[in-house]
Amino acid sequence: MYNKIGVLGGGQLGRMLIQEAINLNVELHCLENDDDAPCAKIAHGFTKGSITDKQTVLNFGAGFDVITVEIENVSIEALYELEGLGKKVFPQPRVLELIRDKGQQKEFYKIHQIPTAKFQLITEVSGLNAPMEFPFVQKKRVGGYDGKGVKIIRTQSDWENRFTEPSVIEALIPFEKELSVIVARNEDGEVKTFDAVECEFNSEANLVEFQFSPAAISKEIEAKVQEIAKHVISTLDMVGLLAVEFFLTKDGELLVNEIAPRPHNSGHHTIECCYTSQFAQHLRAILNLPLGDTRLIMPGAMLNIVGEKGFEGPAVYQGLQDVLAMSGVYVHLYGKSTTKPFRKMGHVTVLGREISEIKERIDYIKSILLCQSY
Image 1 (cartoon, rainbow, N blue to C red):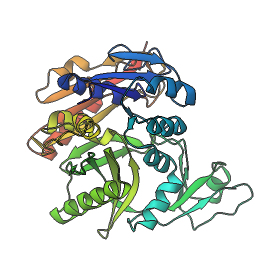
Image 2: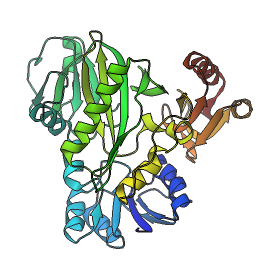
Image 3: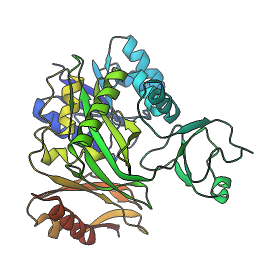
Image 4: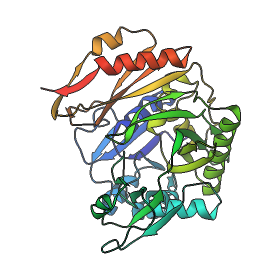
C-alpha cells in the first residue's frame, strides 16, 4: 500500500480526508494557493501553488505515486502527463475532463442512456432567442461550483441577463425530491454505494442547506438510484468516489442532474452515521483496498454551517456551546478564519432514531448556531 498521496486542493474536503488518512498511517500532501486553507496546518506536507498551473502541478505530482483531487478545477493537462509517467491519478484525468464540462456530462448521459433532463448546448449566446420554452435552467459548461454558474430563466428579462459563456440549457424539472448517492469503485472493479440521502436546498444560495439519510423514498426507488449510480461509475470506468445527484419527479421518474468525482457535501453525514465514511471509502478506492461497509449505523442529518448574510471578516460562532451540549450532535468546523455570506464554514451532524425528531433538532440548531464576524 502506498503511504503518501498528493492531493490537488486544500479545502475542507481535503481536511476531512486527512483525518481519515491518519487512521491508515497514510500521509496526505496538499497543493493549494492559500496559506490559510483548511489543510494548510494539518497536512503532512503543504505546498503553496496554483492547482490550475500545469508546471506547478507537474512539479508537485512528481513526488508521489498516487495523486487525487478534492476539486475538479485543476490542470487536466498536467494530470495526463503524470499519468503517462506511470503515476496513479484517481479519478483519472479523462474522467475529470468529462465531468468538469457540464456539456460533456450531458452528452455522456445521452450516449449511455442514463436518464436526465431534456437539454441542449449553446456556444454563442449573443443575439440568441430563448432556446426553449420558459422556464428553463442555464448552466455554465465550466467553472460552476456550489450553486454558482447556474441561473433559472423564467422570463425574457431573465434571458436578457443570461450568462454569455458556453452553456447547457435544460428543462426546469418540477421535482418531488432531490436525492444523492455516493458510490465508490476501486481498481479491482469492486463497487459499493451508500444509502440515498434527501437534500434540502437553500433557494437563495442555491446550495444544500441540510440533508438526511435514509431518504424518505420507497425500496424500489432506493434500489433504482443505487443501480443507476453503479452504472454511471462503471460506465466511466472510474476509480475513486462519485456523488450522483438525482431529481425524483412527481410521477416517480429518476433523472440524473449532475455528478461530482470526489467526496461530496451530501456524504458528510457518513463520518458519524455509517460504518465507513465517504472519506475512508475514497482512500480505500484509490489505494485499491477492499471497500468498506456502507450501512447506516443510525439515521442522521447534516446541516451546513454557512456565513450569515451581511457579514464578512474574522469568523465568530454564536450558539456553539449550546449545540455542543446536545447529545448525538457532532460539530465539524473547517478552520476558515474569515467568513462571508453563504461561505461553507463547517457542518453539524445530528443522529437520532426518527427522521422527524432529527429534523426538529436541525431546525433548532439552525436558529441558534450562527457564523458571523466582528
